[in-house]
Length: 255
Picture 1 (spheres, rainbow, N blue to C red):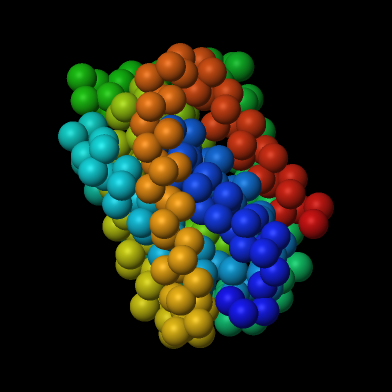
Picture 2: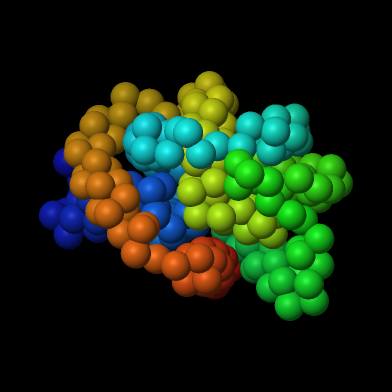
């Protein structure tokens, strides 16, 4: 921390606030936070610093939307996500910053394009939400594909949010079902990533010291997000999620 300038600390604080906002309002927007952390800190090490901040945001989101999760969807995703996390851990053992950024950016843009195409062709209309806000007929292959990609991207660059956002949108989730399912998903997945990150040397005493300072800014972000989410209609919500995904993917691909 003593090597960071005041402006760099301010940028990290703003990015931490955005983490809280994204977890309770527009999931996927924290790709901007990822970009800020990667710009201020070494890209590889930034993932370890950001992880505890994301977990704090996940915990606040679970507290806010805990009753809206669709557990059948979560249980369908977790096995594939576990495979993706292991693949991401192996990838991180040899990949440099450029390989990480290019790979994740390309995946996010591809997934955003697939989602837009499916919605325009009506392919997702076959998935009907049930009374809990979740999909009643989502294909297992689709869930496994997104699950593996989500696990891989969240392990490599904490960028699983956009991938899971695209899956939940394509599965027909409404706002509260989307946010509740996403909150539980990432609290469980991000917590499970901690041992892997420690083993890779991405989390240590220095990173936790910086986290302790940044956690103070997550709470007001989450509060602002909760106040704003009721004012965002479903179509705008979906467009914001897709837009955040595209911007995050471009930033990672072009940096």
